[in-house]
Image (cartoon, rainbow, N blue to C red; front, side, top):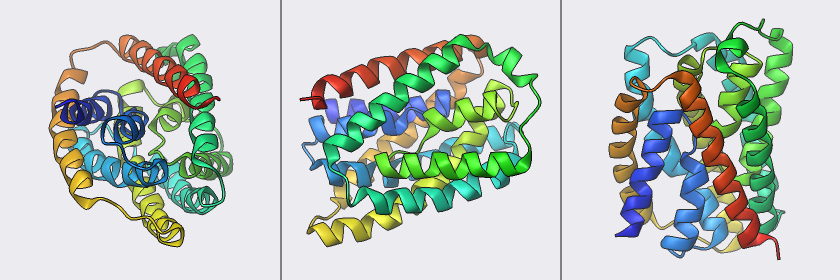
Length: 249
């Protein structure tokens, strides 16, 4: 039962915050479904891609997706994610999860201190800088095997000058593109390691996650943006500390 509760929570996080899905997916697959860590990292990308594309639909209908940011930040991020997934084949799973925890805590601290209203009034970075930022975030998120919303949302708010809800909707589209690219590469990586995806678990997690994402998208319209931002930061801190405690030994 706890496996399906975890899957619903993954979708709820993506629909509500535009991120958080992979943060919950990897621990759920490792500690609830008892999957190999490398397989869990790869599977999380496929699961989050499926959930994210559905979660993005309500935001698209409300015109809360900045397609220019998808092109400038997301497309370079796809290339970076593919490279990061390739690098993941040469790094131990424990190192990947500790690195994920460190980045989560850093992003939480940065976002918690900066009101989204102030951030959205900042001038966006020049296009070439946003492209480089997209590649860099892509490499890192591909390496740790996540969709990267916990990095994409702060980047879109703090660097791209988007309001929180628009950043959430835009993040879901970018997560979909990057997760698909990373998942495709991890299939090769797992093959080289003699491992394989459990497609039944992937399909079931995706289905339950989609249900949660639709609920999260509806709830997001009822919560003030600053409250969303603080909840997002708190989720990052709790999940990050948990990963450090379970892997730093």
